[in-house]
Image 1: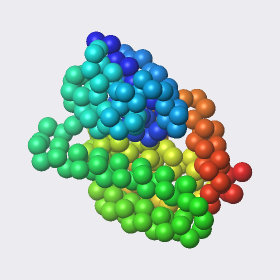
Image 2: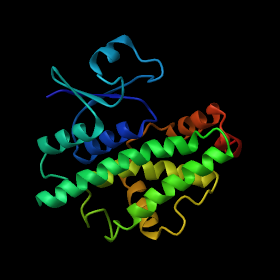
Image 3: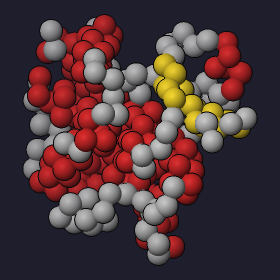
Image 4: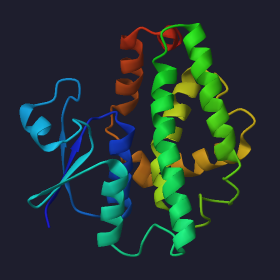
Length: 218
C-alpha cells in the first residue's frame, strides 16, 4: 500500500498524523504545500481545503482524527483503549484537543493586548479542565502512548517553544500538564514529526502577523 501525506509545515493537525505514522513505523511519502496558496490539484482532493490529506492508493482521507484512526487500525496493536466507554472518552478528549489547537492559534495571533488577554483566559479555562484529566504517571491513559497523546503533542510543543521565548504562564500551576508536556515533547517520534526548521518557521509566522506577540519574539 502506498501512502502519501499532504502537509503544511507548521500545521499541528498534520504533525499529529506524522507522529502516528512514525510511532507505527509506517512507510509513507510526504508532500508539502503552502496552505495559503494551495495548488489546484490539492483543492480538488481536499473537501475543506485543509491539511492533512492522506492519499492511500486511489483513495483520499481527510480530517486528522480520521486519518490517525485509520493508520491505527491497519497497524495493530491499537493505540486506543479496548474498553468501548474508555475509547469513546478518548475520542471526546481528542476533539477537545482540536479546539485547543484553534484556541492556541487565536492566542498567538491576537492583534493587541486586550485580545490576547481574552484568548489567554479562555484557553486557561480549557487547560484547567484538561489538567483534571491528566492523573496518570506517564501518558493520558497510563504507561502506553495513545492517540490522545498524539493529538496533544503538537499543542504542547508549541506552548513550550513560545513560552521559552516569552513566558506568559500559560501552564502555570498546572503540574500534570507540565509533566505530560515534558514526557511527550521529548519523545523521538514527536521531535522527528516536524521539519528541522520548524521553530524558525513557526516563530517567523507569528512575527510576520505583526500582532501582540510579535513584539516579544523579535
